[in-house]
Amino acid sequence: MKTENKYLQVLGLVDKKILHQLLGETRYRKQNAQWFFVDYSPADYEMDTKFDIILEGEEKKIVPKIFNIKILDVIDQTGKHLAVIPLGWKTICRFEFKPHIPVIVQKLPILSRWEYNNTLKFARHADLVVDSNNFSKDVYTEVINDFISVSIHSQSINKKNKEAFLDTIAKVIHGDSQEMSNKISNPNLIEDVKRREFHIA
Image (cartoon, rainbow, N blue to C red):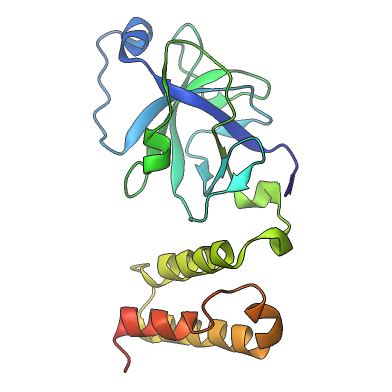
């Protein structure tokens, strides 16, 4: 997988003692949010910027899920609040995760300072160039399945439109069945989703 270097290298969780030194008695109580040491930023990222991909390890392997990660707060090494993650800066950032903090993120080390590691990176799909031919069948299936699930769980789309959406996806998959069979480990993916979400016999 090639990238344009547009991802945030997340180094670890910030030790509570360090947060107290920087932020004093200020309390942040969101259960689905956490502070992280973040390495040099490859771009300016404004507050409320959302990331939907997590890359893992030195080889930047895509974790096969669609994530909802938002920047809530940014501070520098003195505790000064910033309006953006500035290009080229190391920062301490609070991210919100919906619906909850992923297990893979909770496993990051607790740090007292910026200590480099290659564990996780947060990215936006628009900032990555992905070679889909290098996905395994299972990963490709999970990504598509997750995309479908996120779409049909949207409260702003009614049942009729969700069924039409799935029908369209099904036509694409079955219309290119030979190519898709090389990529998807479950050829009945759409039908399985329909049965699970809409109880279609």
